Amino acid sequence: MADARRAVVLLSGGLDSATALAVARADGFECHALSVAYGQRHGAELDAAARVARHLGAASHKVVRVELEAIGGSALTDPAIPVPEAPAPGIPVTYVPARNTLLLALALGWAEVLGAWDIYVGVNAVDFSGYPDCRPAFVEAFEALANVATKAAVEGRGRFRIHAPLIELGKAEIIRLGARLGVDYGLTVSCYQADAGGRACGRCDACRLRREGFAAAGVPDPTPYRDPA
Amino acid sequence: MADARRAVVLLSGGLDSATALAVARADGFECHALSVAYGQRHGAELDAAARVARHLGAASHKVVRVELEAIGGSALTDPAIPVPEAPAPGIPVTYVPARNTLLLALALGWAEVLGAWDIYVGVNAVDFSGYPDCRPAFVEAFEALANVATKAAVEGRGRFRIHAPLIELGKAEIIRLGARLGVDYGLTVSCYQADAGGRACGRCDACRLRREGFAAAGVPDPTPYRDPA
Image 1 (tube, rainbow over the protein chains, first blue to last red):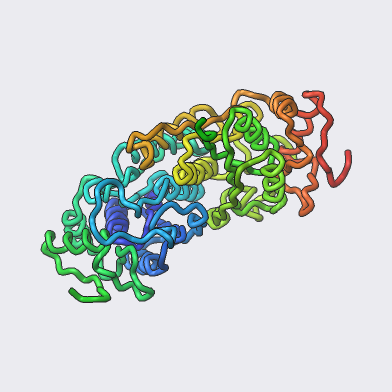
Image 2: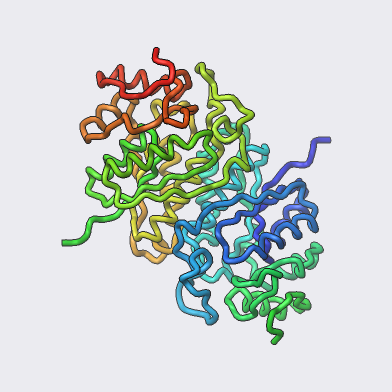
């Protein structure tokens, strides 16, 4: 018997990436979870990522620090830009310039070191708040890049595949999928401005999508809110 | 008169990226230099980058820290892998998995924040030591990615262009080009294992290519070597 094939799974600590990890495990991979500390407003989501990695049996979990706040340009990396609490037209200020390109670049580098050819990312194009780097065209372009950018691929030893198993799913479908796969969503943090204990604001875009998702899925919402509605 | 267009220039402190910055300036751009501290063995090249940015009139210079040594897999980021001092077949152990993908991702993010559409990178495919992410196919794939990955491009405000002005040049041609554009190569550090003062070993692949380049270009070699040959 060959060893299980390895996959790198980007794990933010949120609901979507926890579900992506559960899918990767169900697909039979030995999962190596990667979280990136990129100057988020709070460390609660990194704590959540560590809990989720343990809960879903990741073979390893690595946190890589990237000083993205030096570049700024987003409500998530620049304290001077407030997190919006009402929907607005267009791509929101929580968009982080080139974030998913950067996250996938780090995942690709680690995959090459591990001898993994499969990378899972929990992006989705339905409830994606308009982020350009959550669309199928982005995932396809990154996969094409990965297969010319790396020693492993150029030497012909294999082909990288970027898996985005949630990309066509709405939040309620993601929650139903994860619930079937045994994900404990009480461990995850989605809120853009969670407190140190991981309690959610209940008002930002991410909270709103998450709350509506649980309601639509018919799954009890385990999220700890600071100000219960 | 419109203001000068802005460009982001990746600046390592080495000979090639200094030349790329001089080309970007000669192309008429207001240049914003970006250096990435990714766990290199020595800080001498980041000191060199700061000197080169000042010398070539960059409008700003930013250093972003990325904890790439957490991933390892290269003689440049893992102290357990020795830097080779003799040519070997294939892609060398100084290859850093997905490095140029990561560097360009950071440059892309900063370009979007600055409102720049042009990114310069000093890769070259001739004396490139076999690195896959220094080839034209890589640069083209990244440019395609940039134009689906970003809010600025997806909103139709413009198109990102990745400039690799050295990609078809050998080391001697690069040195002649930079000398014409006024680059002081005595400020640059190419050595993979320079000491804290920026003095080169004279023996690694990077030193060998650089030394041969000055000889072939007929330009005096201003490199400070630890052990003069």
